[in-house]
Amino acid sequence: MPTTEIILTDNVPGLGAEADIVKVRRGYARNYLLPRGKAHEVTPASLRQLEKLKKKRAEREARELNEAEDLARRINKLRVIFKLETGGTGKAFGSVTAQDIMTRLKNEIGEEIDRHKIHLEHPIKTTGEHEVAIKLHHDVTVNFKFEVKPAHEEQQKPAETTEATAEPAPKRGLFRKRK
Image (cartoon, rainbow, N blue to C red; front, side, top):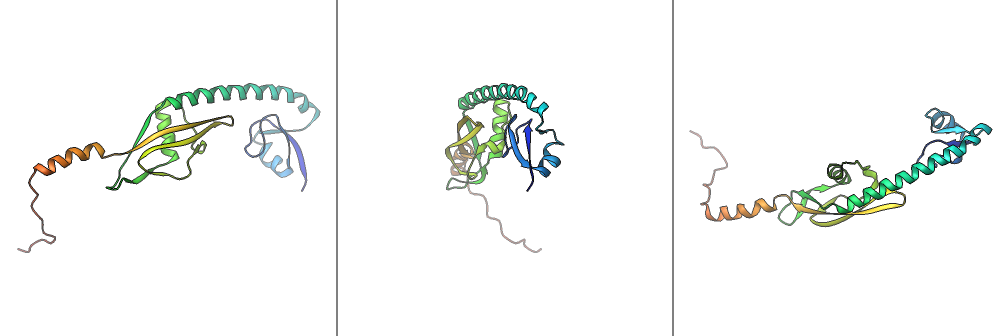
């Protein structure tokens, strides 16, 4: 397969980061990377601009690392409780997914985190303490701790006391009586 060398001007997942020189198939470069402005062909002029791209990349990576560390500190301070409808055994009818965690974090800290950065093997269906790893940056991973509680826990206790004191409701027939 014919390949060509290109200089990436943006991060391309699975291929490389900004200012990397990579070999790709010509069709991929010509039909996808070059028209979208994610890469330039390797020429003597573009090699001279490579230093500018490397400086820009270093500044961006330092800024992203600082932002990720700040976000990790803010996430560590959070104490989040999810409420789920549960049956009598404590097993939840619903579940807590990465989407739910992402939405709650956005509401709590005001910044949106991509749900793909939240490493959740399977949706959480049990009550109790849980911990999820969130990869904010390739160097920064935070363990987010949260608790899942039954939604009707507080409402069930008062309801039990009223049922014990109240008289039983009259039984209704399954079928209507004909007149």
